[in-house]
Image 1: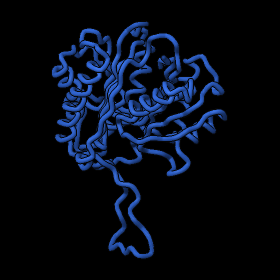
Image 2 (image 1 turned 30 degrees about the horizontal axis):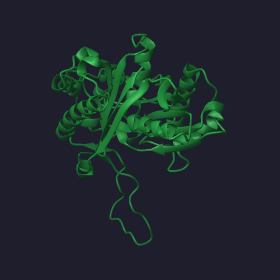
Image 3 (image 1 turned 90 degrees about the horizontal axis):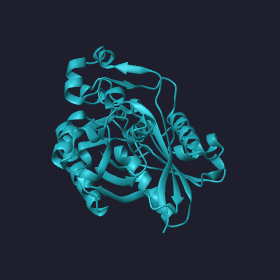
Length: 325
């Protein structure tokens, strides 16, 4: 049986840091208001990097961490909701930047659950025998789809990229179980419009507004707590694991309060949840990848440790992966 291991991770965030005090200069808010409600103190906002630029930097670091070359990569999957173009895909652009000539490439969109969806998709390609090594990237330049006058959303998000290299292995380790789900009936609680219908038959009375994230905060909170708690329990059952078996959980970094409630509902100590949202905010498709890379770099993750990657996002989507490191 082919097993799927993570053999390398990487991440990238812009140098430009935007503090809560900086945001308070734009909208009616404060550092205390933001920190007490979200746990976020600052975030990185791109001043020059495109989505593909950040994805490329994270990908290079993941490939170096894996100890392989770009010629070993057979497939690139990029999760994003903020591509630079409708076409080409971010994955294809990164493939060209890497000069990974032997790989196929495509994007997928599962919003903030994107990294988990991409990991699960990559694992299926590997388990089927079609590919041996797949590069997964989660990346978003969320700053370009924010309404910077809407304090309910602009305080939450940041830009960045996270990446991982997945590889086939004969060693019985790696991805133990995974689950994905979605509920399209709740799509209106978190969304961002695209380009509106426009052709010679359409007459607008006024120019359509610039697309930006819209969110019903309380509804998203309730969905997140319920879906993440249920998804953790499901993946534990699928992997024949208990809460005590888990060394770390890497959750989507959206809100400290969400993670606190999920920890309580899951009967898992909050100390097991790795968090970095106070420094980066919600980086959407990138958040789990960035957090995983930072966890790896701490040196606290040892061979044989059980970790869970879990996320939720617009769509609405959710998903989790249980991994033996």
